[in-house]
Image 1: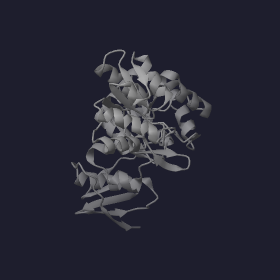
Image 2 (image 1 turned 30 degrees about the horizontal axis):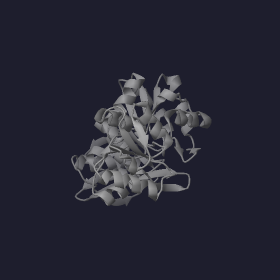
Image 3 (image 1 turned 90 degrees about the vertical axis):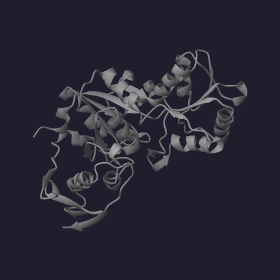
Image 4 (image 1 turned 90 degrees about the horizontal axis):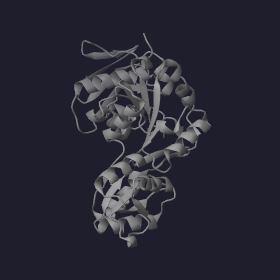
Length: 326
């Protein structure tokens, strides 16, 4: 069997939780990323983190040893600025609730960044920055409540860090939403345009999206019509993937990026059960009966095949009861 990566011409990779957690690379990630070019596979990075410029992100990746040119990074800050530029005329004052990198993207599109609601902004753009505080969120709330157009670069509720899972931009957006009763337009993941733009930039016709989050990476890649792979190095787990709603189910489940360089096992149906490798699973009513090692990813692949086949269309997470046999 051919290695999984041979079916594709490009990889569109998330960063946080896939390549690195905080400032440090995830073990084995850099080595895997270096392995794509010798196979003729293009590599792009699609990130919802709007706190740094694409050039800064690329420089960080190179410092870690990963292959990355400045143009290989497509960010939600770029997507947010593009969306805003389509909705307001040049010169419009925009309250930037976020990083200097986000303000720079606004400037590049002929808009005028401001930092206070007292400057009568006609729009607010909100992106993640670890330096944001209460006063910044208050300024955003004042402007949004006054009627300003409101765009969020992304709505990630959490972000993987070296010490664990920390609040993401979505939690800060939720604070402004709770204060104003309004809902922003969201520019980045899980919207499809960010992935489509990345694929176009790479000239890819058969890309695969890889990420650690079902609600952003996998949902967005599915919406774009691309193959998707969930890796277990960040936010989502075997259990949450099994329970995923239809729109957030990945095409492939990988332990880490280096799984691209192995054949991917087929799920085969036989007498109502689904077999992957030496593991098998059967969905019965609200439970999944599983034969296999809980530490073997093939066991979870079989469980997903059985459960998803029994529940092909669901817009809610559905957590089955698991029955294990050795």
